[in-house]
Image 1 (cartoon, helix red, strand yellow):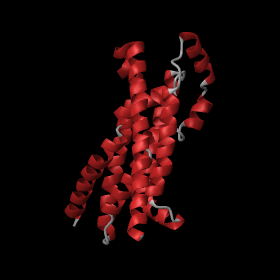
Image 2 (cartoon, one colour):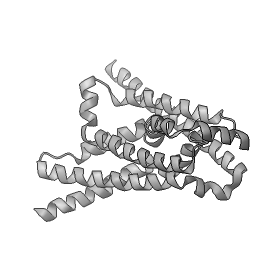
Image 3 (tube, rainbow, N blue to C red):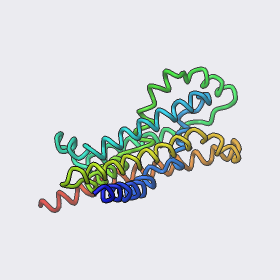
Length: 227
């Protein structure tokens, strides 16, 4: 019985890790993190990276364990979550696309203005949700949670434990990607970093529109099926 539970936990770890890591994609969201925290000190960014990683793990774990029950309780469907979250993602990307690159003087002013208290206020919104884990990630976590559930309590707990370990591993990767994002982008130089940040913001905008479209399409298909 113990070997069966360990095997189930291991398989669930691999399943959840493979399903959620490409969607969360810390390497792709790290440039967005840099753009939204422009002016923050290295210490503030390090503290933010830790807080965002913790928030992401907690949010995704909650979605995986009880997300489907919460949506059912409030009568909210996944397409509605996709539409609302996609609009938030698109608005954040539009803001990044229209943000002017800071000069040396303005960077100093931003560093003075970006206090640790401001960083704490922004740690969950928008840096954790929807930048680090958006509606698509939450929907995927809910789907993974439904797939891991089992009628046998012991087996269900083992599978959920494997899924939780996968989220912890992804949280570590997210922390490392955000913590050392500036160092990773340094070889590009200032001009290259600006281009890369703009390209990442455009991709994020397209992703937001894609999320909205998927939600709208599901809603339209539901209306057509009912008709």
